[in-house]
Image (cartoon, rainbow, N blue to C red):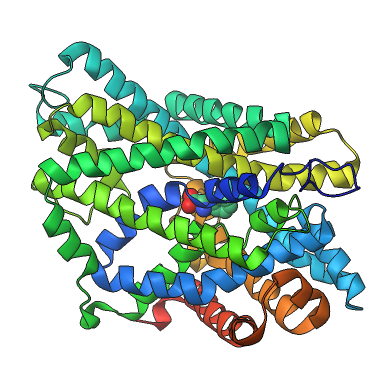
Amino acid sequence: MALESQGSGRDGWSSRSAFILAAIGSAVGLGNLWRFPAEAGANGGGAFVVFYILCVVLIGLPVLLSETLIGRHGQSSAPESARRLARESGASRHWSILASLGVFSAFMIVSFYCVVGGWVLHYIWVFISDLFQTGLTGGAFQGRDPAEIEAIWPSLAGNGALTVGLDFAFLAITLFFVARGVSSGIEIMAVWLMPAFFILLIAITIYGSFGGAFSETVDYLFTFEPEKLTGPVMLAAVGQAFFSLSLGVSGMITYGGYVGRNVNLAGTSVIIASADTFVALVAGLCIFPIVFAAGLGANAGPALMFQTLPHAFQSMPLGSVIGILFFVMVGVAALTSSVALLEVPTSWLMEKTGLRRVPAACTIAFGAMILGALSALSTNQLADFYPLNFIPLFEGQGVFDVLDGLTSKIFMPVAAILTTIFVGWVADRRLIDSETGLSGGLQVIWRFLVCWLCPLALLAILAVGIFPDSIG
Ligand code: PHE
């Protein structure tokens, strides 16, 4: 079709809107629905949120445009696209390392991301069975003690066979879509599921705003108290913006590789970043009113979604139905992200070895199964296994936390720093300018952000990620 990767015979998005929906699908995920409210709650609300938005605009957006333009220019897997741009710019082909690092990160992230996806599947089932037991009216878990509801989470996390089984199930669903290809798998999934996701999100938020503590939430999320904006809060916000926009893992380079020449990348980057930020904010406006109305605290961290929220559904009319819809919505968002994560190493392996899509995707998924099983077991059987205990940064951390920390604190920032240096300083300026579609003042601002602000700000995150004791 018109916008496919022209002439190469390579699979690609069938339209500009298909690309936008798939990229939004990649960006919107557990990072928005699970991590953002948890981080905002744990980092003082408004100060975090305001700084987060600033980070999206000043750092996220320029890096997002840099990644998509590398992909679109190269029309290949992420490392090959970077190599091509380097070659045409007369630079060393070793710059492709920025993308190879991302491919490796995407592989590690998909392995533990599917573990969380598996937890979400479990909660869908918990609410479905509750609906059968307690019926349509009234709250969820009627007649059950709050302690019993909160115990659902530790009993899941403590069950090795269950967490591994659910991880494999979620990975299998992810594999199904990746194996079908870009235009007939990933795109079709995004085009159907993303609108459904938005409808669910808005409906649940409006519902929560009637019964829930909405004005308390708005105060909480948007009252900017400058004294709360400490170093660690700023860093948490930058890291979150990064993870949420799917940057530093070659995801947007890979998806950019399926975009046609006639798409304006600057414009689409703004749409993708705005949609992602909108969802993160609405997720806050969706979750906190329910939590506050039940008289619960906002600062439960990762347990907010899996422990606090199910408890809050108890006092909500139609609680079990809302519980099902809520976790289906989270599952949909997680799936469109895990598909993007699996596609990155799959497209690399196909190009590297000449394997066809199905065997390549299965090979990567098999590796992710093994690594994912170790992550899934890190909340139970392997709870005392600390693989990188000898490195202070990872002391006392299980496989799940080590993979999360290695990628978000080291690999993703390094890949993004290299990306901005490459695009801002190394690559041929005319090639870059012809890809961005920017001109005049916007181009000058973009250049300043990519050349200076982004690499310096990212270097600061990396430093604090590695030496956390040096701040705050
Ligand atoms: N951005 C996704 C989220 O918010 C996670 C992700 C990271 C997906 C990197 C793809 C690539 O959950």
